[in-house]
Image 1 (spheres, rainbow, N blue to C red):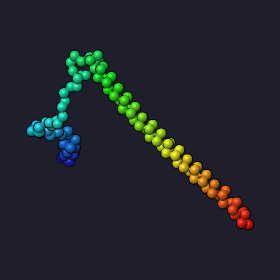
Image 2: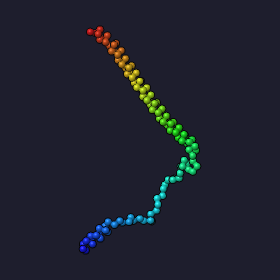
Image 3: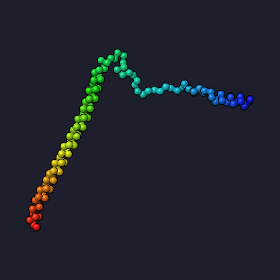
Image 4: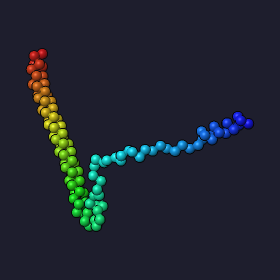
Length: 112
């Protein structure tokens, strides 16, 4: 009987919920950044007030994309121009080789 009572007491003591320990002496965190509302969330702000700002941002984003695309186009044109120049140089070299071969063949045939 004593063993049964001891067993029940141990089970009850081990299964009981323990309260979490909290200390109130901790200081709250201090934030390093500003947490005030932005203009669009300010009292009295209406979509009509924000519309010029939104349009300005959209326009600047379009301009940035346009500049990037123009830069890429210029780069591609430059590469194509270099490629054409290289091909033309190769063609002139081939023509010079062909002329050199044509001029050297008759002299070799006459020697035979």
